[in-house]
Length: 138
Image (cartoon, rainbow, N blue to C red; front, side, top):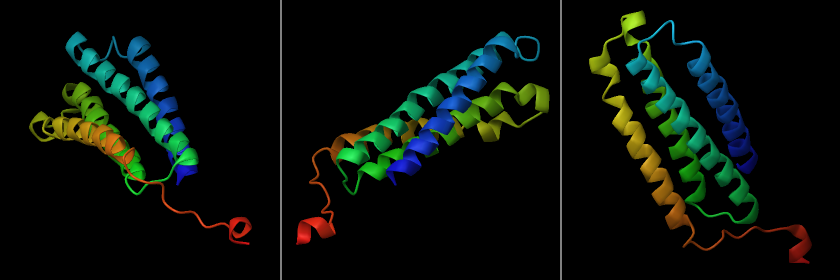
């Protein structure tokens, strides 16, 4: 599980950097300034929460609780909903997308982010799960 979160976090971080650079250099001619700001917010929050996923993956090397992986999955779902919806909203005019369907997804993503941080905090109160190793059982 820990390697999975490290892979997801690193991949989402790389994608966030790529999208951030694309927003800074390639979108000025395509979308309005307001839409560019929306896109940049999506990239920024993607990077923040990709770091959170990397943190969960790292923490799982040192302690494993039943809730800690949930934080990583909530961050991942938050990136998909929050940042993904903002990316789509940025191109809504260009691609003729219905903003009335995309807009409500953004706050759901924000709630998933908050839930991830709350679950991560609560996980620190849990006892580590027992790991049985052959070397320790002898």
